[in-house]
Length: 573
Image (cartoon, rainbow, N blue to C red; front, side, top):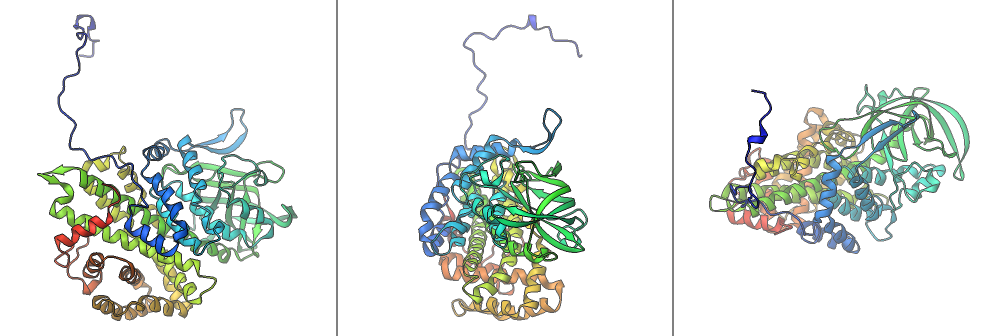
């Protein structure tokens, strides 16, 4: 039965014959290309015009990339052809480098050119963090792996401010000409910056850091004296290990201390930075994440010995904000894909979007995405006023981990329902929906899991009473605009007090607080249909029927109302 087939006895196919036409390809969804994710997004474009109209042109240019077919192909290729670790060169020299598909570098160059990483630190206009958040929201609809280095570069600028010897890095991290090389910082137009914090035994508990540091010497470093230490130890998660430099933690005489580690030293030699392996991740495939070891690795001390946790947490506000924004962007992309598929594919005599249950699902998703978007942007606005307003500073202190927790936790639910809208077509790797589905949980575990964020909210409420006052002032500012929301607010103080008394209640309290901020923002800025549906389905005991899955809105929302909500959410078609 395994004998070779006698091909000489087969008749040749006659000239001009074609493959039999077994079927016609029809009733497939239209390609989602040629649209502008900023101009055609009613929520985002209105928010930018309201708060940072000077940034509209930048957002428009970036929004065009989201719908560009060639850019979408770069994203696919960068995730299809994953990074490859090169520990040695062909001569046997240790190099510890990572190779990427050219699509990754093209995407990085575009992100840097459009200032996704740096606008908050370069724009002279008002509310640059808000404008930068809008760019990050859009970039997270372009490609998610590259959103990791843009977010880390954004946060790192704050860390460079405390040490005069790092001023050059502060200048270069704002550069807009991406360069993938190992040249020394002084020779580069811009730099990429990473973070290497967590270790095998500690995870999010950075107090358990085992890596040690021993003072080496003091020396001039780009115009200022730097305190150099030798590091010995490991890091369990280090993303973007090909970066030009890293913030990291090590213990000095038992005290956790912050350091900055350049990959290339001032004399042009390579630092002793050893990449052990690249992580085989569930998603975020285009981006390299690694395990690394330090052995006599040179790093500059940042801040005082023993002050590492306080120092690194000064960056955390910005990374957490970026994750809240990024997850909202991922939800927006999921919704856009679902709307396009359901709106251009037919079944049972009409488009999928016209089917009653699908109309419920799409409208429910649209409400959730709009609420998530406004929540993230509200935290970005607070960030812009941290230095000038005690009220905004206190609000940001509690709202940032709250928004990171809630938006990142909701993203997988939206991605799941968007995939449901596609059916089997959404589970195929050629469809970007599959990539979003695998990506969706990631932001919730980077830079602190959901529990860590809720613990931080509770800690702020306990240690900084002004945070509670600032939060309540924020949501009470719209009291009287909707009786359902007023009833929700009346019950909120007791729940907040309960979680202050008992950590067991931290998650429901944080969710309730997030819903309160979302409700307040929707009352200020959303359409009547969206506000009414949100109040009728999201506010706990006040809700008139909402199940645990999207698409289970009850009698509180009419079919016609759902249709208007979906129309508001469309960006294409």
